[in-house]
Amino acid sequence: MQLKIKDNVYEVVIKRKLKNKNTYLRVKEDLKIYVTTNTFITNKEIEKTILKNKDFIIKMIEKMTNKVKKEEDFYYLGKKYDIIRTSSEKIVLGNEKVFINKEMSPTEIDKWYKKQASQLFQQRLDFCYQNFTQKIPYPQLTIRKMTTRWGVCNTRKKKVTLNLELMKKPLNYLDYVIIHELSHLIHPNHSKQFWSLVEENCKDYKQIRKLMKEE
Image 1 (cartoon, helix red, strand yellow):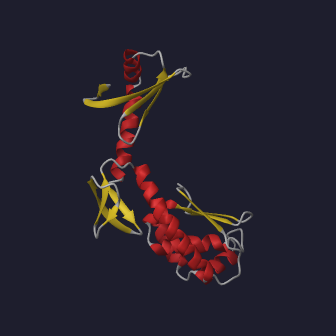
Image 2: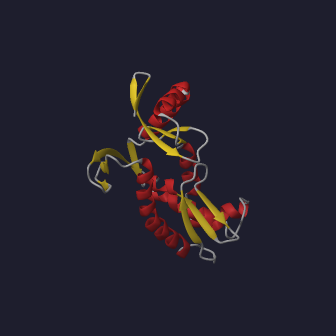
Image 3: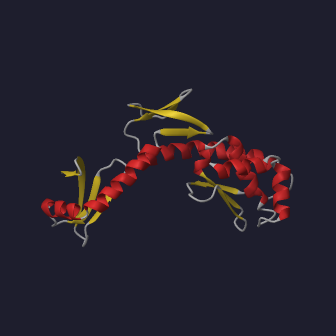
């Protein structure tokens, strides 16, 4: 099913469920309108519902369009790559360009980042831990995408969580965040003693923090 909204034609994907009492509308990264509704709702009724909520749909489309545009640039360890969409199933990094399958969504790209991060973050954690100036327990590592923090340390569980977005930043950013979280295993606060320990293990931490805040 296709529907014209504001001079543009959008594909409408309908999923009917017997248990659904209401009709739900959303727009995904492929800019298709997804409708989840009751089994007995007709296409004509769906069309009326979409047009009735046209302003809401347009806002969702604009939001997703902006999100997709952000994916035009690709960052890996601080270096920017231009995206070239291909038929290849794998992501391949060149000197200045990255080759990505034309059907691959941002979510799938994040899965690729996480696969790279699982190896690199572990290596850098091992390196920082082995060179840490004080004796600390070896922490469990988890990786997830976060919007407000670069890292988190659970001192009770001895667990360090690193933001997947660090894969897009220079390597020294990653090392600083790891050292920051390892330091919390000694000082579970941001006291003067905490920052002294951070500096002991990362001499240029102030400069790195300043750059991270400016981005």
